[in-house]
Image 1 (cartoon, rainbow, N blue to C red):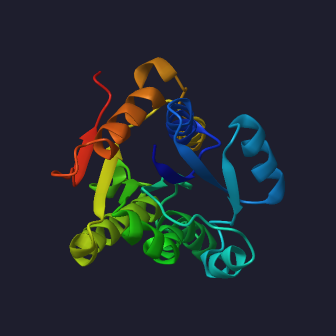
Image 2 (tube, rainbow, N blue to C red):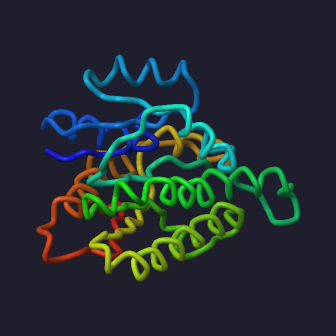
Length: 229
């Protein structure tokens, strides 16, 4: 049985990952943005523990954790939460840029920093759920793609830095997935949303858990998964 800390367990891919780990008896620590959300997650996943910390404010995470119990060791840290705001470069404001960089890049870096002692103790695994936008930026995706390109750089650097401590680092690059975030993306694009066109969160969760459950003599560094159609 492993111990895992998950961001984004309340929706989409994160929900499926949390459900599967919970079903097999693993210990879950779930990050929630506020106390109300933490209560909802605790009720949804019996036996899970919660931590409160807002990914929109990475500079406050250290203070928040200092006032709460944190896990003693971690077999994995699963960065699944993310935000998206589309727009042309000529229209995106600094606020839109900063919101996406904070939640998608700076907070994962800060969470990893804060939890490295627990990960080193367990020779754990850090998994970053990135995006196809982390490999290629299309029109109107500049800020989101920049945050995800940065997330790739974070993962690559972390892998080199922590390999001597036995920590594995994996980046998963999902294509379009039928999640609430995808509904928002389609609304911003002005397109009709058809979930049948895209991968299910279950498919992405299977990909993520495959990397997580790989025997210790190997490491999946980068893994892309796309809708078959």
